[in-house]
Length: 549
Image (spheres, helix red, strand yellow):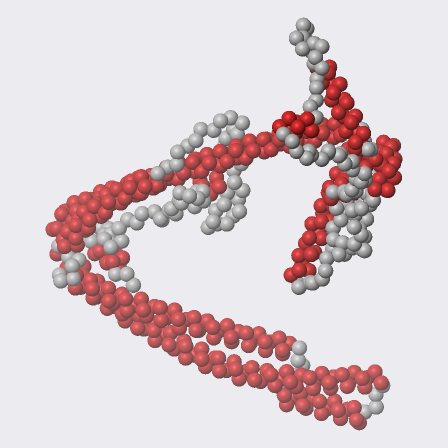
């Protein structure tokens, strides 16, 4: 129990000339509740303004929505960047004000000490000792009052239990004709004798039986009432004991109050003797109140400084939100522009594709393969070379410029024979005449893997021997004519077949890797279903036939 407030009350009673309000020095004017510190790296969520701006109060958890940034800034115009307020400068300013507050508190403590000495509040003075005795008596009285409150609470609980039992008894008796167990037994015996000795109708007999059954059922209720009556008697006895304790506690409180009144009279007489020092005490109290006012002003200054810092932090935070929102808006606009450009490019590309001849690539491939097979296997190479040489000679003659006044005109070119050159240098056996060997062999038939793949793109089988080249050339020409007659999109293109082959190869490779991890062994076979063909038109043979002939 605090002592100082009790002393102030005594002084108000005993100092009739002027009321003196003493302030406990241990409890100076408290600053306002410590405001939550705003984290520099987070939005101002802890202050009222910041919570309203940010819309997310962590303490209240109101889940309020943020103020739309479009209401604070015009995102279509350039946004000036706001510098972030310095937390270090804020802390330094607050620390300076705290230092001034501590200095004022120290000065105020000195003044309060002088007031205590003048008023005799020290424990080693007669007034101090009497005050201590008075406070001890008041503490004892407060303890007794608390004990009395506890006793009264026990009494209320007992009363509530008693009222509950009485109510249950009333409810039970309202439904019973007889409440005494002996009366119930007597009534049951009378009704049973009446049933045995009297003649009555069937309905009357049924009614009589129901009355007997009701009385038998009320027998248990009567027993319960009897047990509750015993509980009620016990509660009444407890109530009497508690009431006696309460009366005894009241007497103790009255006795201690008399002692408090006597001690207060003694203290009042001692204080009256020191009334000559009242003027000095008044001056000290005015000085203390002035210091208190200065301390309050410093606390207001610190609160104002914190409020300004929060507002600057809020402005900086909203500025950051606006800059981010503007960047996001610019990004969305740029993304939309790029998507529109891409859509326009794809549309143009599609229009160009539609403007092209359908299956132009496939027809060009058929023409290329037919030309390649014709020139490689169906045309005589020597005749082709002679034809090329003749064309080159004609081209060279066309490029030659005729010489005028040629000094070598009339001369005939002479070719020296090899044997003449040998005879010129000396005798010898001579050299054997070189005989040109003409190759009579037919060209070797072979196709590269790339050609197999190209045949697969147009869904044709490549020739497997030299005899099948002519037929394959005719197939290619027919295929080219067939492609020219097909409408766009009716058959897969070479691009579609390449894509399907790539996917099939990737799937087969993945399947082969899984089988290899499981320890799958066996000889390689081109007819194996795990083998990915180079072209859909190339038919694999399981007999390992050689493609070279």
